[in-house]
Length: 536
Image (cartoon, rainbow, N blue to C red):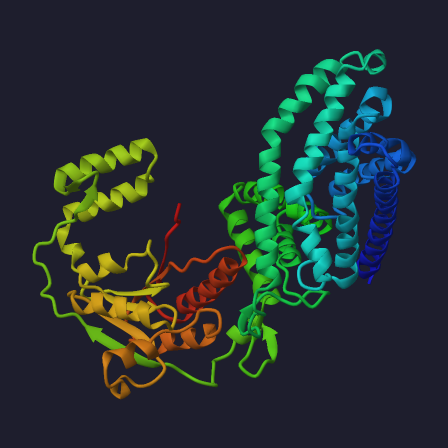
């Protein structure tokens, strides 16, 4: 209740702030345009030179008010980086100081260009922000004319504004009255600031071009399909934001070992810019003892299971913890199986391709020692590899079973396992090209591949039908995949590898899904071991 009230007060304040700034800059714009229009027989240059005199009082208040935007970013009222905001506002204040205190800077045409460029940018910008707060969606719900102006005017007005600001800087630098007030004015305004503009302006404009592309793409993107399976929980605004969930999980993970740190995380504002600091503190807590490391991991995962939701096919939602605590009864997978046609290699030796060479035997062991000494691999990994070199019989994996969650991953071990004759239980997306590749590789190997099917394999009359019906989805079918694996090959020991990878928030979802499957297989199947790949 308190959070909702605080959010309401924050939004009310920001609407008022943006409204007042929009009104202020509208006055500046209207007065500036009037000066251009009613200038009589004066030249355009003279009219532009008179703009500052007609708007100075409102201009000073409107631009000075932007200093509050640095404070807004610093205390987390808005999601803007403090340093970038300070640089943007600071450059404007530097120009404002120059034009206020340097008489010669006020009465030259560049001042008018600067002021008109500023006001033409700021009026739609503040109106856009105000609309975004009121509608709750800056991308799709703001009026399109405002949206277009916000992300398009910069292409013309940023260069004209920069040109105008530079003319103000150079005129102020040579103004004797300004120099008396600011002794270092010439160095700052004639050399330092122009150099900063020369280096920084292209990056600022390119950043706006990138923002425009992303914003227009989001504006016209097709609406996402209804949520299914493992999803981020709904927030107070009806969306599925990751921010509050991440904070809650991190706070829960450390509270058992450091209650004060847990409370600090829960109460932290500006999470977008501070989370990495708390992640570091979490790792510091884990490093204090093996027990602390395990407790942090257990508590964090437990909170994730409780917070994340699982949307069933009928649209109803339960916690991920609840759905994974029950056997899935709505449907089940059929099992596909392909045995490779290749003859197993006899007396195979461990070979590692490296810098155009194939290393094996003593040559490989020497290189392994170098990798360990470099810190490329850990001692235990090096020792395990050398033991494989000394025991080539271990490379016969025909009696071993490997579950690959994300079997088609480019960094996964599918190709190696197939070459060594392993029995691979492949879990990957239900997309025909994926399964065409995996099954083709399996057929030409000495190993075997087992995989989930939507229909019995006997009903697949050809390979295309087999490919189209193979596979599953770790997000939407997590409990069903878990149950299929629990019932598969009773009595066989499984090595379960988690290799699926996605970007951003989706990776959290797929990681939690894989963790749930690994957890239940470890608890309910004897001789289950786990494997992970930390990609660079």
